[in-house]
Image 1 (cartoon, rainbow, N blue to C red):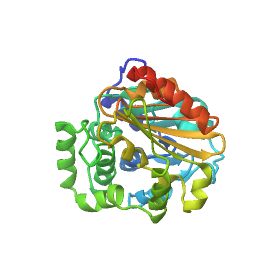
Image 2 (image 1 turned 30 degrees about the horizontal axis):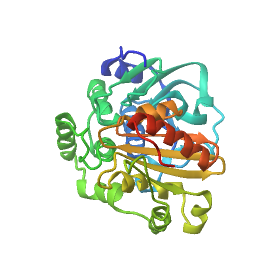
Image 3 (image 1 turned 30 degrees about the vertical axis):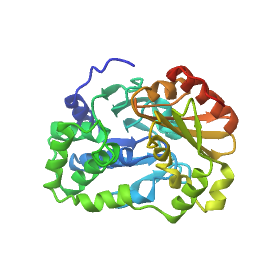
Image 4 (image 1 turned 60 degrees about the vertical axis):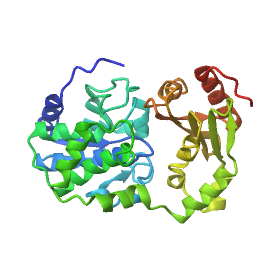
Length: 331
């Protein structure tokens, strides 16, 4: 990764010095990606700037309570006939995580890369990468302060959502004093924490429950019971009446089993493509494994997409986990 030589002040100046922006987050956006992208939109509006906010693929509908959610364009169904010279990417662990949105960049586009993943490869013109931050939304809070914009309920709600989701409801080890101080400040602007938690962390669809029932039937223990995994086959989506969003969080059921060091979910989201999610306790840095397989993330939460069959994907992940744990896969 390139060294981070840029500051929140430089990021704020980038927003102030251009007039029209393309704003994007990563494919399969989560709460931090969505909250941060819409948080950028809130900042740009206060600065009097124009913007288009885009993602490759759908944004989960559970985040539709966020302001300007309706402006999020799905590039796969709403193509754009425009290129942009100023781009802001949030929460993208590496350049590939932007997906096909990269086709909208002008030939000399300047790119502000705001992120907190240790696997970020510094792909921007300006790289504001803070790996000590719990969420990209935490960094964005400091950018908003540097830009001199006024906090209101809409901006506060976007940033709070990013903090809440990437800290697991302020339960994960990345929950720092700075995170709690920011959250406390944001509540002063009218954010209702119970309502946000209900929408983002508690409420689930019936399709998710049906998918969970199918997935748990595939539970496997391997690597001397240090690894637990579940598998979602392509045909399971039709059987459960589910979409890709309904597989979110399944991996946590594996990681939370007593004695398990790494939980894994294999989701065959399309024929020939397997989305792998990894969650760890203490012994393994799963971001290193994900990066080795073309993905990225954090030491305790990472993922990648492997082209090939489920068997191919499992073989690659089992080998990498065996080397990291120093045990045989037993598969």
